Amino acid sequence: MDGSVLVTGASRGLGAHIARRLAADGRPVAVNYLPDRAEAERVVAGIEAAGGRAAAFRADVTDEADVTALVAAVESQLGPIAVLVPNATGPQPMIDAVDVTWRDHLQQLTFFVKSPTLLMQAVAPGMRTRGGGRIIQIGSDVFERAAPGMSAYSAAKGAQLSLTRAWARELGPWGITVNVVAPGWIPVERHAEIDPRIVDEYRREVPLGRMGTPAEIADVVAFLASEAARFITGERITVNGGHTMD
Image (cartoon, rainbow, N blue to C red):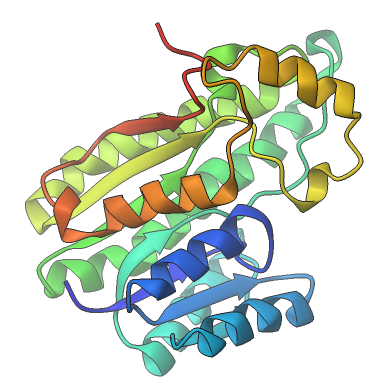
């Protein structure tokens, strides 16, 4: 399946690793960013230095006009989008359940329901015309762990999973697969100030006895984007070292 890849929120964190990994498979990659072009350009430069093709695209993927313009720009510069990875996220504050407001819920739903919906609607018609595509959402095992203080985030991630399954059924006849990769806690840049004791406590709960790495999430995304996953849709693949096994 030929075509380009769009990874949102790809200037840092998991998104940057996913962009690099998919580029290594030979696909042109659109590195979406919003606040900092320099970080996105560093990701692009790294991909190009490794022999890949990429470009940075600024867009607020929670805004309908920005999403429409983003998809048009990516397809004009890199070719039709064959793989969409809605990865962009906002702040994830810990708030006691008794203090959560509707605004708190909307903030999470904006990133995990509104944004993926806008992106899907922008790319799906083209994928249909070309005979198929891949949509790979980035979820979270917090939905299963019911972590205290994360009720708004967990609810939005649950909604995201429901979207994935509904879209898989609706878009399947168009040859589009829709899946979600649900990482456990994968330390990235924004976790740099976390108390090491908290990391150690989490690690002790993981059957494999270690923290996961961004590369391990990117590898699963790459699998779902590949022809090897052509008959997998509507699934959630949890990547957390067995932390939430039944």
